[in-house]
Length: 589
Image 1 (cartoon, rainbow, N blue to C red):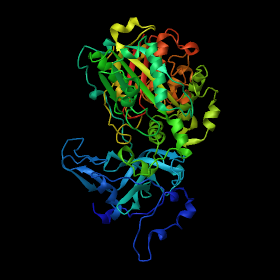
Image 2 (image 1 turned 45 degrees about the horizontal axis):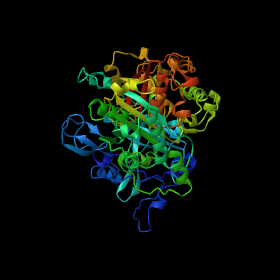
Image 3 (image 1 turned 90 degrees about the vertical axis):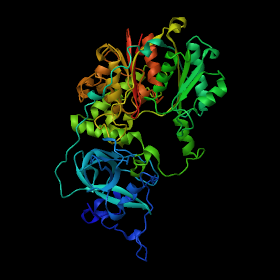
Image 4 (image 1 turned 60 degrees about the horizontal axis):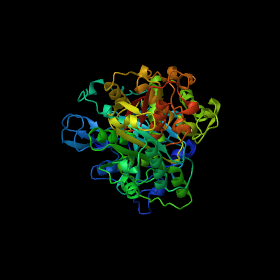
């Protein structure tokens, strides 16, 4: 296709998206044309992407009004972003080729939260599947219409905003020539991708969880994160009946100098304080979820490299945010790179937006309403009331849930977890030490770590939280247990839809069956058929980023959960990862 058959480019501003329809026609292009007639890019509130050697041609393609997407010349499939090798046939003959610029909205959310000072809400974020290949999708904005005019299945066509001399942002507007609903991609069947156990010798049988510890947890504690880490580590080592001299391994997530109040700094600064002289360390953010760092520790112990690995996870997001607000912590202004390159320009700044998009596809396909998500939030708060460590313990009702301000449809305030400061530590020991400690040991029945889904927020799974279906299927291949055997579920709930996704992925109900399973919340409450997050989860107890669920599972299996104890709990499932990547662990008494 050549430029003469492409839709004409239109220049729009971020603030134009929010203007009343009767005022938009007066905006025109007058501010983008100099007296000389030269067209100049506008300064808008969009973060600019940083074009790379692979993506520069994509970002520049709108200069002539033509959208260009990576096409494999061998098999004809489209891919986005541009890969160095076709992921479908592995040909290296991949070129940037013109497409019609027409597509179908396959997920949509109306963002109400002001993430960026100069990018005013509300605005529409969508995932658009291209007409030529529905597996090639763009996260984008839908412009020039009211939010109520856009839904899953709406047909759209590309338009462009010039954001810099070499950057044209592809946006989409309603395709008035095609008012009918477009096709929605069917969910992938992952069964054929499941791998059998590599060996009948399970590493899980060679380890035990012998210690857990937690620091003070709260909002805006203004405590140095390394102090929180040391507090949790001391508590966990003592809980295991060990001394620091017994610890010969360290593991953490995400490790290193990652911003946003999401880390204590990694294994190096902690070792500098503890000086245990470990034989093995591990820190990174590409584990199967945050608790994947604990699985890495299990592997180190099972291999004989270590006997006792101290794992820890520290967050201080609440204090960090406060320091940013009052100017004590300066966040550099830079172009969007990495996973944000294709999201930040559209104001999709938060997992709230990315996961809300999946929720929209789920509700379009399976039906249901926000009340199902509300039952998860209300139940979490009921459970938190029995947890003296929880940040929020005051009850909320369904009316409170539905009446709370919207963040990114269908998510309101109570669909989102609570940023806190705190640290959790876990000791993984060789199984022969299990009965030597002062507390009942907890054993590992199985882990779920296989990647079966496309590792993307928009190119793969749309119906559920990405990377929940694969690890869940893998978990059950490593055990003779089944979902019916589980007594308590500790399911990652960065957002209510995360917990819903894990419920279905793990097989506690069929895909699309969460509304019937949860009902008004009775099934997932203490005393119900499957108590979920009896400590309140991250929705009410606070976002300890995966490790909090693991600690609660150990407390439940020890019988140490006090007034929130699930009677005679023998098997607990723990999931971690609010998206990509993620993992699951099955623990037993």
